[in-house]
Image 1 (cartoon, rainbow, N blue to C red):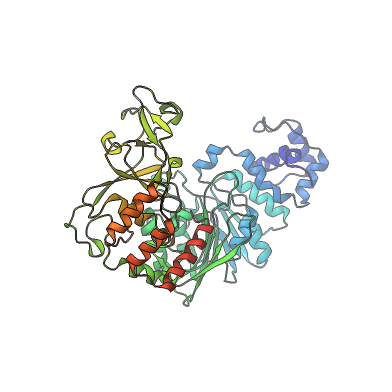
Image 2: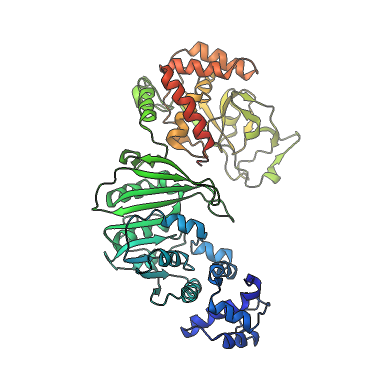
Length: 538
């Protein structure tokens, strides 16, 4: 097979020729045009193939598999970002199409890019009629070339903004990887959208799929994993569940090699349709890692609040049991006996400097304040501050009043973490933004008691079960059920643990007793804690 560098100039020339003329050139014509410098658009591509190379490109020889890579070389990073382009590796395309449960006769990819989904669909369903829509003319030319090389001549390719299509109820399958976060102007938004203030462009492609699909037709999209759980998309999830029945989910935290963006492959059937008894959930730690069937979700797990991939009946029953006679880190909920409308604690974010190299130092000096960072915090214990900071609220990007950080006593907890790691700090140190703080206001117990609960295996298991996130968010901490009782025993043990004494296992047993867990429930927590920590849910 010819290398990408060897065929680059010729293939770029082929795409440009196609854009200008609507047809592909003969191999000899292409070689002459490129080598004679006819295309002023190719100054960066000095490599020149020969006629044989150009002929090989146009004849196929499986070179169409590399054309998407060529396209990405031709597009600047900023261009792809502005268009919201996230290119899907071919193994992920095939994995997404594994979720299809219909037998499609008409298929559309409304953001077809370089055409990989269309090619994969043509191999699986050769009799299906294919339609691809793409706003980027260069990407569309690449798709046209790849389809021609694969000897697919009857596909319909449209150069357009797909979200304005009105092919209502026409298709059996809508698939692809719609743009994520594209910079859409108000004039580009559909007039009848349910989400006029929504920022992320993939939302409008979900609406588009609902218009394009006939009842019983299926949507299979690559979406950001955040769609399944982030509060911003709660209204979108509610709309999706009103119009679709989720039929499959596949979670890949590390889908893309060039940047970090956890992804979900989602399959959904347009309502009305026969009831779906259970939704299979697949998990794949990375693209080239083995996939496993993680769960079978009932409809109850798919709520607008979040799609809980870890839903289990016994864990749900345990969650409800722990909520009884509990309070939260805010007023009122779940039987709290605190004054109505009064917060029990104050949450504050750590300091965002905007440039740690400029503000953070590894040695003390006049005008510098001691600074705690995530690496200084372990369950129950704080190490001596590892940094010093010049605090200037005007110059810092984001900071709470210094008095909050320098409170006589506060809880510090890691912000970027799968589970809660918290300790009481009496040093009056500032905290960097990888740590957040909790200040007591009307707590009916000492800070050490709260730290004992937060670090326990029980509350960490409940936390991972309900939220499976790589960040410990204030909104989620406020939902954890806190029982009142055994305050002295928990507090004393937490103080011992802070000094490097005592046993965390003993703390776990105290918390189990506090929440009234029997032996079976304790075994369930231990098993779920181990399983959830092994999963890379972020």
